[in-house]
Image 1 (cartoon, rainbow, N blue to C red):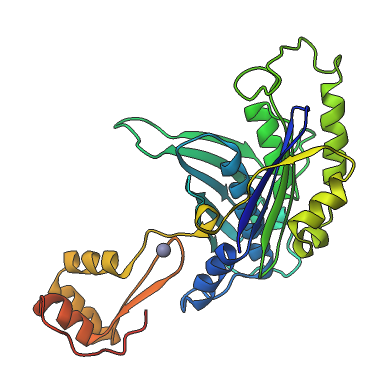
Image 2: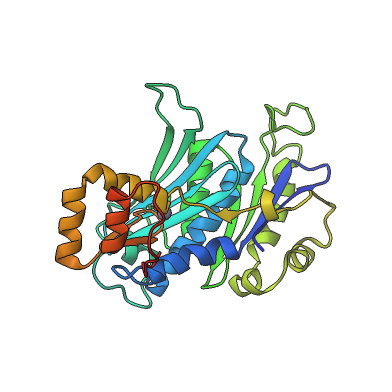
Amino acid sequence: MSEIHKFLFEGLPVRGVLVRLTDAWTEVLRRRAANTSHGAYPRPVQNLLGEMTAAAMLMQSCIKFDGALVLQIFGDGPVKLAVVEVQPDFGVRATATVHGSVRDDASLSQLVNLGNAGRCAITLDPQNRQPGQQPYQGVVPLFGDAHEKLEKISDVLQHYMLRSEQLDTLLVLASDAQLAAGLLIQRLPMLGSGNLAGTQAANEDEIGINEHYNRIALLAASLQREELLTLDVDAILHRLFWQEDLRRFEPLQGTRGPHFSCTCSRERVSKMLIGLGADEAHAIVQERGEVEVGCDFCGQQYRYDAVDVIRMFHQPGATPPASNAVQ
Ligand SMILES: [Zn+2]
């Protein structure tokens, strides 16, 4: 079961989140693999998208915002676009556009930053956007401070959080074919609503606030990819923070937790085909034997054979004969 676990370090301005996406992530991969025009992702692309999915879930769980969080990479290598969208109820969908072949050992920059033009964007799109209102978007290149190419998506996002949000953040991300998982540790701002202690500090170094964050971040950074993929939440938190005073919150799982969600449906595709017109739909069936429409976002394919098309246009309300259409 997919789950989000939030925790605080008692008395310290440091918080953490651990996510493990199982069914929510495997459904992303299942739909893609079942798509007859694309097929499954090459392994390095699958890993990148899995880490992005875990990261987007971590970020959505940290912000108080009623809208979708969209994490995108615009690549200039074989991966042209990788997108993850997480809704406020933790519904998630993800996709990547891959052109050409991908080597099995391709690095992040070989996938998306070959000509130094790759970009990472984070968009916050309000649920009830007013006419003319633009969603908030932050964009960062895939380089570090010394203009070195970043080779981990976690480094790109840590950089983004520090530069755009002034938040010290540590991320550990990992994914395979069964699981997308991530750990986030963040220093809470001393001023504003995130300030748990309610105190003001002129110099956070002076009062030792950074010292606590630095110690905890160092512990978190020791988490290995294999551990993140194989240990359960209790084991991971114990392994890293057994000497710390942790306050854990009720996990978000089941109906309140992360789940796969795409807005496509057979009904919506049918409406679109009806809009196309009977002549056009029949012509496609005549030419190809069926009408096939794939969802751009999740890869789900919807198929209509001749009987489906006749039923759609000519027999409103009638009981249709059984068809062998695959959904
Ligand atoms: Zn879809």
